[in-house]
Image (cartoon, rainbow, N blue to C red):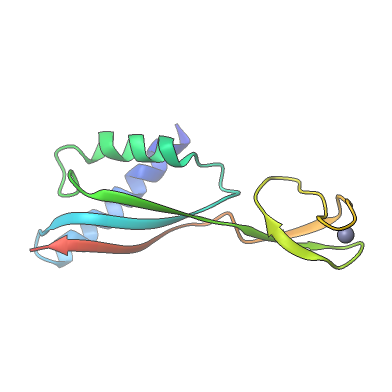
Length: 114
Ligand SMILES: [Zn+2]
């Protein structure tokens, strides 16, 4: 499952940070998920909670922010937020839309208690 491997990467990053903080307990993790990354936040949260059991992040809360992509229409030049694959231009309906961003998954911040 896609979300499970993402949750595992988040936990790997969290574990490295906790080691740097001499094995503190992780209380919260904030991640940004692109709206176009094909990640269901609820699935990600579920996978995270399952995989975090028995780790230093077991009781951490996972904050998930969604990040929209940006579309630029090649036909009319309009720029607009994109939240789906293969978007149509919000102004003229053209499918000739160049999409940037919205596909990243980043760990923004993490709180660790000693
Ligand atoms: Zn357009």
